[in-house]
Amino acid sequence: MAAIAGCAGSPARNAASAKSSASGSPSSVTVGIDIPFHPIWDYVKANSATYFANSGYSVNFRVLDATTQVPAFGANELDVVTTVPSFMPIIRQQYKISTTYIFPLARWTIGPQILVPKSSPYRTLESLKGKTVAIPPLKERFGAEQAAIYAATGQTIQEYFKLQQTDAAPQQLSLGRVDAAFLEAPTTYPLLSSGKFVAIYSVHDAFLKAFGDPAVLNGGYIGRTSFVQQNPGFIKSLVKATQDAWDLYNTNTTQVTTVASKVSGVPVAELKLVGQVLDLSMSTDLRQVLPRDVATWEKLFPVLQKAGFIKQAPTDVASMFVVTSNIK
Image (tube, rainbow, N blue to C red; front, side, top):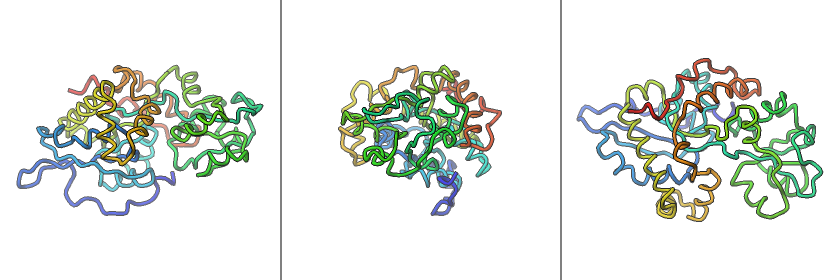
């Protein structure tokens, strides 16, 4: 995957991660993210001194982008990254690192959507076969669109559509240069709110039909398997802090987004929109890793391989996730 094929710009940290110094100072842990506007993550970052005060760990938070986060993880600059399970086999293949998914920050309750003009004659996925569809470059995506189309049609996304990969996918649709665009919120928001475009299909539609899962586990905390095993105290603290921030978000969204706005620089109103896009008001039972999630990804990884997103589907999927109820 080109998005993670490059080398990280800075060298790995000199000190081994998550180990105390000779002076007995707290262990240092670095958590990275490529979505700096996630309200829950921002709130945990803002209150990290309080959340991790008695954990024995000094926790640092770094904001990267989709092209640098995983290389930084591979270079041992990060102990935990927030990304999608679809990257876990790529990390193993490219960096020889086994990883464990710890806790969710998002689910595909809608996911990327296919938008067409309101006047379009194309109203089904089937009617768009062979038509021109704009999409952000697949090398910058997480495999959801590729897996969805393969799960629904048995063909790769490149085979099924006349695919136009471009950073200007929304503009191509707005200008009438393509028949449809495959986009993810918040990019979809201005198009749909204009009243000129409609969503006719989504990743959620495909995954629900293929896997029977109404809320497929998406982005979340992922760490080296060895780190997760050797630092159960930190994992427990991170999960507890995130659960607390998420609970507060659902009782006082303004409080959380106001703090998050100071961290990210994103206006409160936009962060509230992000919360709607990510469905952060989801029920408590979905704010954890469930056995159902493991079962879904056991089915989804082979689809990602057939779709061309990963080279080899893992066979040890159950060992790649920590069911939240098992964190003690």
